[in-house]
Length: 168
Length: 211
Image (cartoon, rainbow over all chains, first blue to last red; front, side, top):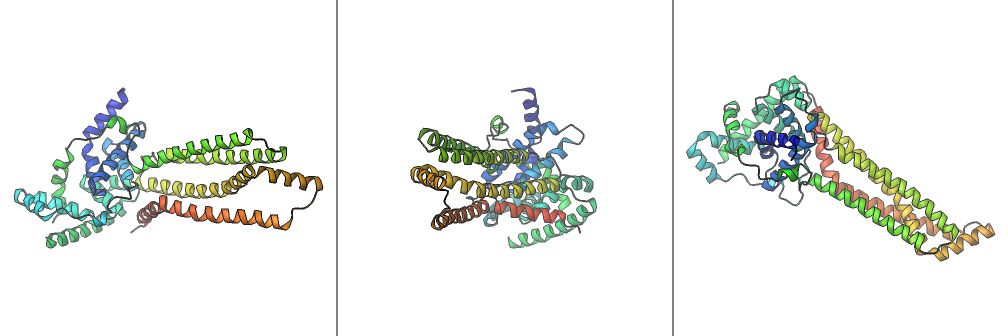
């Protein structure tokens, strides 16, 4: 393995959380998540030379990984997203006993499934503590537009979480 | 629930610390099981199948005895087909190279890939429309070489016009070919890229709408 490959694999290992989080938001099926992770790593490798250190490595990774996730060709034979069952109630109840935050996070992930691809990207970047300007640069829209969309999407999420919570 | 309160839990979630159970060395060499990789593999198979079909066509052309008229005509048609094929495969090679460049902003990347995908499906349709009648004429020329050769010689020696019924047969053959190609192509393109293209356009429209 050459030096460049070693550096790249170290980088992936250090930042694998970014990939896992994006996969979890965009794909429900574990096999689809694996496929998407592979595709994101491949795309990152193919543009690895274009990273010159002018921006943060995480910003560069967000951009490539989100582009890959949004344009990902999902396998047709698997069960579509809208037929996926939510995490079962008992699992959530168990988590609730351990920690309320875990249950809230699980509900949050359930609600995220109902957002469209752009809204998912917005919320992901927001949760990663990116500023409006950084989100705007990643998505290619204006910072004002980011703030408006974020408020709207956060409200939509709150509604979704409220409904999911009452459903249980 | 306040979403901001979840940020810590989001960043410290144990699910993000699990091991990557992937053959990373294979992944960076492009050996992924994703559909994009599958499309690239299909493209390679299509190229190999085209090359094999050319070998068969050339063997049939040079291996069997044909009249000089027919041989010259088929050689010219084959040359046109090769040039069209080379152009098409070069275009698709550039396309599959470009879908790896995802370091632009989401809006620019989506715009680029949507444009490339739409352009290349149209090129694919146009290419098949050009190739189909040529392929039919070459195949008919190779299968019915004797009667066609005799007919060409007879027509040229007597300098007589082609009878109307032959025009009708040729026209009907080409028309049927075009209809079959049109139906198959649209079905193939829609099933391969249609859903994906619609989804990309939806994302693009969403990103372009200002609030």
